[in-house]
Amino acid sequence: MSESLSYASDKTGLPPGSLVHVGEVLLERTAVSLIDFSKDTFTEAPVDAIEEVLAYRDSDTVTWLMVEGLADTAIIRRIGELFNIHQLVLEDILNTHQRPKFEEYEDYLFIVIKGLLTGEGEFRVAYEQISLLVLPNFVIVFKEKRDAILMPVQQRIRTSKGRFRSRGADFLAYSILDAVVDQSFNVLDLLDDEITALEDELLGAEPGQAVLTTIQHLKREIVGIRRYVSPVRELLSDMLRSESPLLEHDTRIYLRDAYDHAIRILESIEIHRDLLAGLLDIYISSVSNKMNEVMKVLTVFASIFIPLTFLAGIYGMNFDYMPELRWHWAYPALWLVFIVVPVALLMYFRKKNWL
Image (cartoon, rainbow, N blue to C red; front, side, top):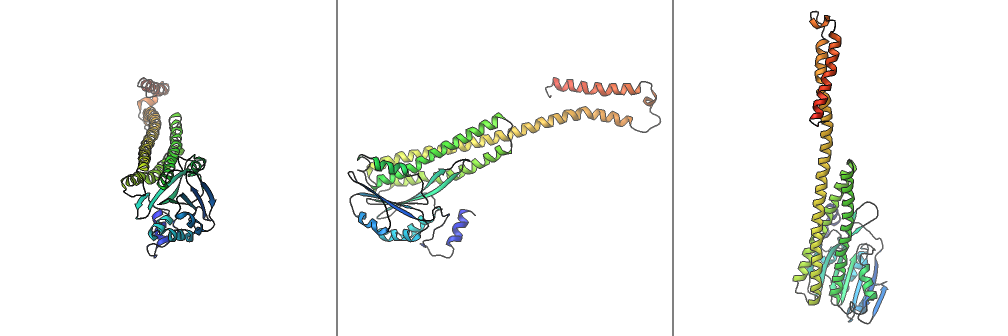
């Protein structure tokens, strides 16, 4: 079932703002954890009850609330109540078929981005929706599952000697976006390895049906990657143009760097798409050349046996008055013609490099 049909079936008949999880459930149990830090302090702990975060809401430290798994809509609803988040924003968080986007509200910023992950074995990209709410000194991240895509940011906070921790929530939000964008480079590196191996296979031997299947598979993967990566450039551009006081001037400089990364990723995607198109052309040309070789051999044999069939047809007719039938050397002469004609044709074809 397509994403649009799945969304329609799950939301049919419900009013706007209804909190219903739309999409595949990647984590059955919602887990909530918290990282609170400042230049000199650091706290990391799981959250058993959402009300526990109220102690950090108005503090001077920066708090990162991580919600992993969207199956429990009651937790998302309660977070919206505690932080005065619009119901439509909560609905977008639970709808995992969202297009990456940036929305600016009076008291917070809402960001949706897609994380790209690959597994072992066959190259196949898995997508995870990551939603961010950026508030003063508070960042709430909603993820579909547990994975290591944001682990580099967590490690930077744990090991920071003060530089990272001395910055605000906007810089934390940038760091999360940058980690997700940089993960796309890793996916494209794996894609490049797949295309290189496919090219070697295509040029090194006679291509089979498996090569065509692989090319079509990679083309579909690139379409999916481009679908979710392309809007990231627009998202970062909107953030750079935003006049929200939640985004400091120093952070905008880093956002420009992330914007450059997004452009490089899009350029790389276009290059890989062109490479696959070229490989498809090579495959089609290879199959056509192979077919031409077969047709050339068949044509040569047909050219040899057509005159022989003609002669055999003539002398196989049952007429009484055929002069050659009563010649003493007619049979050996006919065999001589049968031998000379093919030899002459073979020599001619070899001279023309048709064989």
